[in-house]
Amino acid sequence: MVPRVEECYALMDEYRMLNNIRDHSIIVARIGELIALGLVKAGVDIALDRIIAGALLHDIGKTACLEQGGDHAQVGSEICLQHKLHEVADIVGEHVRLRDFQLQGAISEKEIVYYADKRVNHSSVVTLDERLHYILDRYGRNNTEIYRRIQANFAQCQVVEAKLFARLDFSPGDITTMIHGPRTLITPLPTGYSHGGRY
Image 1 (cartoon, rainbow, N blue to C red):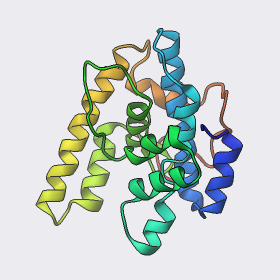
Image 2: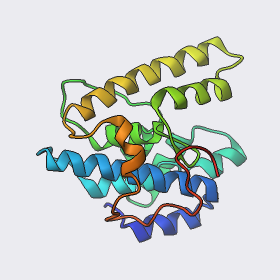
Image 3: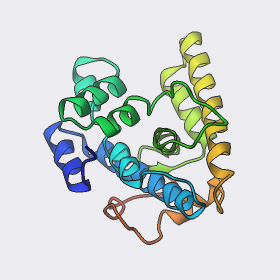
Image 4: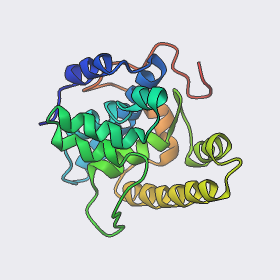
């Protein structure tokens, strides 16, 4: 089952998603929506509802992991499975690291959410390089193995970006301004949203 937007917000409440994580998730969903609509326009067969729900719920396990530890992507996937949301569980489970990515394969919903998440730092739309520097500074500063894994993950994300935008009629840099355009399936951007800095 793919949850409706209202059901995603209800799950955010049920799992006590913090307001800043909720705002982040809404912006990730908006980017996912923009990319998905562009791909549909280009003739790509993609499930827009799965992308939006997966993006809204991608950090559903974050509060539990902040309190108790654990892998928030895995915990989020388990939450989805508990609620019989099988069609978004893999998207949530792979939003940090993609498994079995194939450059020549069909574009998948999980690739879009994985990429969209890397374009949002807190509540700001950023480039992949800006997000990489933030993640390296926050998580990889004192551990060379984590530093290496983060760099490898972002190298893969750059490949995902190239794969997605090869089919789109806009560039990665256009997302920052496009996010303010007409909204279709999700709510307006959070109050105080900034594309230049954290609010």
